Image (cartoon, rainbow, N blue to C red):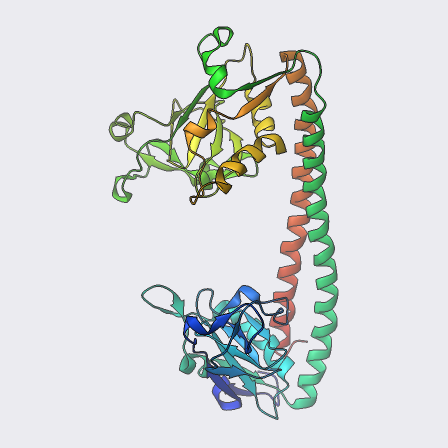
Length: 397
């Protein structure tokens, strides 16, 4: 440790106030009583955001300038209180003493955050008052604290500006692709047909069907094995692609007993349950892939509809609005296969489908490339923050 610095614990230098939630009947959203915060959901970058809940019964209070720590999953994130507030059991307030610069304490808690481990409770990982008080901290002389805070304030302000620009650019990239996607399906040409999936299943020219089917019964945890027939769920659909590295595996015998949800190469997958909306084309050399109950597959007859076209169409606003309408009319976050059969699809001639695919595939690939660039920039910025904090509290700054 740097000369002149001391090894201390949070409890040596701070007062820790554990939150306690009032009874729910005292909560309101009308601004009556004291602002009430229960956990991390209202945290900003550094300062807690405006309240959305108030309470007319006050339990434990935090003062303006106190550091609020999330003490239930996630454990460790911190923010400054900007006013006197009531804190629930998901938070603790840490109040620094006169010899401790509160911003120095804030940055040190950010530095400690990855190492803070909560107790495993019945429901949440958590940390209690005594565990917070036992957290180690490096105490520098007050002038040194102020110098370090000045450096970190300036650096973090610059990082926040660059991060905001990267996040804005990331949103713009996605918005540009969405805009092109919508324009393609609103400018229809001759020969474009607007039909329901149910109608497509009944049409003779489909020569079979555009098949829509959902996943089979969910296997038990102990039935999954190291290798075998791949089994995927909605969390395997990542950025318009199927991430097979997230697949689980079943024995061929267990897979054979699943009569539904057997997908194959080039099937279009749609997440219809819980996480509704992601669409991807299954690209696999496997003979079959078992789908979980959160996925629907569509199997295209290439003489009349191409899977690449269908996937792009199912990402468009026209299709999204249909399943969002179903979800608004239901208490469950899902889109049943019976409802999917009623959705209408815009089907142009094959040559138009091929042209649309070429245009949208190019835009999508460019969008992915730019998103990767901006996402990497955000990762680098977070790594830079961690590096600066490490230097600051190991006496290297």
